[in-house]
Image (cartoon, rainbow, N blue to C red; front, side, top):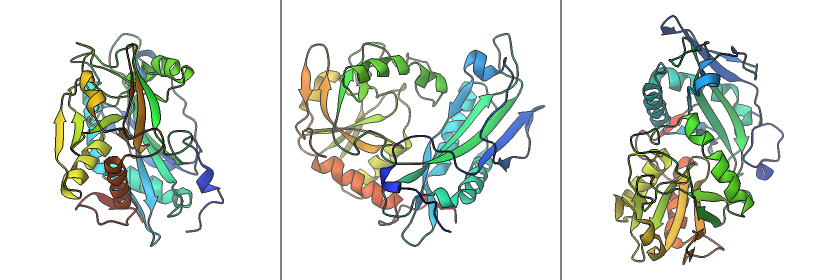
Length: 341
């Protein structure tokens, strides 16, 4: 398969429409047969559930070209399971794992020329999403839904590539106890736009959200989970029922323990403890791991010992190992890689 004529190493993290996308519709209590389409626009009622009551959820994953030319995806079954969790919470029809994986395979295969070549540092980002398309005026679940999937070739998530970022503690709350913080709902990301805008205008790349109940424990950034490394080399990840269960974080925890022999602690992390860590990072599908060099709150400025110039040794090795698995350079645990073509 000949690849598209794109300057892959110059890509940022932005939308670039590819040739095909997938669409399936849910009507009369069941899913219809999904199909590929070249149409990149969506036509729905002005009274659609997604427009009136934000009834929508999404996922994000990537496809990679390996050295032998094959195209693979990374743990997509977990994305399917997480979308099902979101659907249950928002009273939307679930997309079965089989349907999800078949849609993924069809769409990536049809867009194989858009999957960046091995070694370029770019990937094909895949966005499956589910939304209420049918009209509903009273507050209730929509009568019809669409499951769609599109993709776009992307480069690094943060401008300037992989280098330590500056973040700030947000004055806003991301998710209430017993709320929707543990699902990948569009509404959770809409509420983060204003805090993110404030952070960016003040020169920060991201926010650090604290727990809404006490504002004393670290939660996440709104788009990524946190990773901390202690001075004696232990990996610590925040644990909370209002944090999104990141597939990347779960994979990094396994890699840390099984590949690197690190001790891992998944537990509540008081903000007061952050200044004691040797390394700090944020992790997610888009960025994998981005190191954090500075954390600012109203009361103090925390300069992470690993600095503002490069990765610390533990997070750097952790990222190198996981991306090596994703790119086919390191053998993956059984079931982690799905070969598309």
